[in-house]
Image (cartoon, rainbow, N blue to C red; front, top):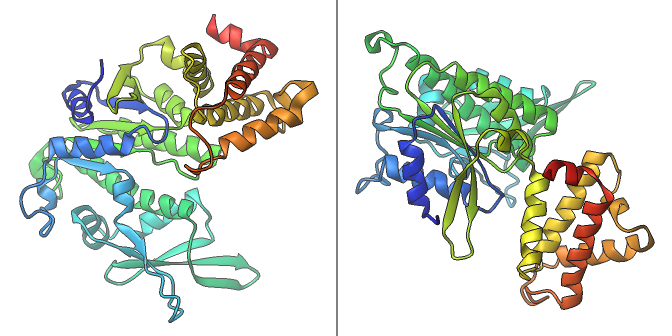
Length: 371
């Protein structure tokens, strides 16, 4: 049954499980769901934008693209100013940085997921942070601008330090014995895709560390985690026992569905199989569009990686590898609105079916998985 994001947020709010794990493709609406959940739990009061509420008023802590918006660069190229990542303060960043002084913990986590030679340097008032890189042999590169992936890892490190503090305080059952009362009203933690730009080893490690932190929580705090990464999803699924698992989909009319996944459907959860099902449904309903070429290429790439082929094009029909790879590359990379119609030609639609059938018939594991 189709729902709005607010409907789904209410469903998540009313669930009894300690952990709710949601898988969805990028662009489905995970970040908007986190915002809808936050607005449901703690709607903005008039004038709140001008004067943020105190930390003690917060009922939900969330990490998402909106969290990353609190951190921004000021590039003054004319004056050749040193690049700095500025921090737009809110109740949580003030507490973890200014009040608790967690900058060393943040640095350790950040270097663990990036490089021990990449070092953040906080300003004395914690309004900004600069970065340096030690190249070895006494070579020092100060004031560098880090990559977008490294920036995301740094912001996650700030959130991770905060989450450790939150769980530690709320684990003290007697409220009077806690060192602070600022988290007493906190009920939910919503984590949206903290895995950008991590390699597989660090992604698995982050999932295990996050799961371990959540499992250490002894309070009534509930956790909602969304991800587009099948590997991240699978690791978390295996780590938690008291959980509910879902698949979030967006319908053509703009509504959404949140489908609960039970038992073995999670153990055999596969990005490959979902891509295949999506393409097959489009073929069966004669609704193939150009974006299905992107899904088809993604399917070939994932399958090639799984089977150990260096190039996904090696899975194409032997006699026409170059021909079909050019069709897929050109069609999947055509993004300009005036460059092509969204509906492929009959010949292109036939190509999607031919290459899907070829992949299924050539590799028997598809039939084994579907049995």
